[in-house]
Image (cartoon, rainbow over all chains, first blue to last red):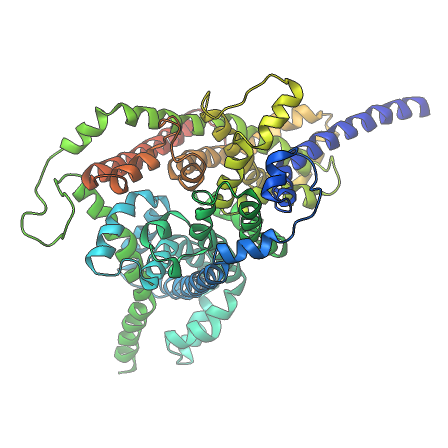
Length: 284
Length: 299
């Protein structure tokens, strides 16, 4: 009896080691390129070119970082990214829950067609509107302005926001709204005092999804911004792939500077981010 | 009297609440979508949209131009390769990893999940430049290959789609890991326990309980893979910009080049984007029909 058990557990132990080996292999594959990047960012360009690409730096050349920061104009890039991401997120969360509340709790004939048109928007890709957006923004004279980028970001985020907000507010009991109505409360007050505070959990999920999407957005702002002074982090970093590509030390330092904010954000909110990704995928 | 004023208040509140969302959405997405289809049927050459004669009707000329362009088929092929890597690479791998984590076969589930999903949250611009350097002639990949075969001369030009597909696999497997993990955890653990008591092995549990209850998730993931492939732009635009010699072109870059590189051909670019939307709708419908026909019963 005990012999059988111990033989079984020997097999189980080998199996368990194998499973761990698989998991560590894929984890290593996932983070090695990032570790390689971090390591290389401490080499001088000369050292990077002349010595092994896989070795640790001989001298830890931290000066790449201040150099890259100045060359990349990172202070301005960070400012702009925070501006776009912050305002977009606030606007999307508030507008989504306003409309979501109206769709879910205020009877109206318009709801059916409006709500459906937002849901179609989830399926539309940015590619399908890129060229017309560019032409329209030019036609109304807003090319290369912060405001046009902001308006586009808010509009593009609406479908997902409306979907999440409406879905959630529908699950709030009607009786809550009805009893407030009987007490004579206007809908706008009900929204501000009761619904919006109750919707905070989903509001935070939506905010986190919007922050990570907007912070990393590249295609649109690449098309709409040409002045250095209004560019965000992703478009700004792009210059390190073109003209400055051969200056490896600074290039790698710039990439690290570019990924650190999202890395910190992810490590803090990883639970909410993964939950949001899983929830967002089910909508299909 | 109270009834009337409250009815009125109801209508006004409705529109106050709905209007900001509707305005932004219609201006940025709905109108441009319609406008895009419209433009694809015209001869618009650029310049002011409001000048008389700037826009003349062209029928399906632009679509014919796209279908006669060999670059369109090359780009389409690369898009399909990306879908294949997702469906045959990211999905099974993501599922396998999610399965290992969900069945409690290893400790530190949170750690593994966090690390494997990590590449996905980083800006694709950073990722693109990183891999461009990694695979370049001065990069680390050359050295890794030479460790195994000292005479190896690596070059992006031989089979340029392979590194690209590898990076896609690397970046997005974590997404499917998360989707599968969340859904495996939704399966009632009592059902799995009961099957264990009835003597079902790990393989049988997988085949008769986990697979059937995830059929819907596989379909969703396949749809995600298709729309993801058609959406992808940033990573390739940064990493290869479609080069060398257009070998890694995909539809979105093909469209971008028509509109923004060299002499702009906006109508043709819009024809391409309309075709992309149609392709994704058709593929999604096909998958859903297949699921209805052959798929396992959900719930």
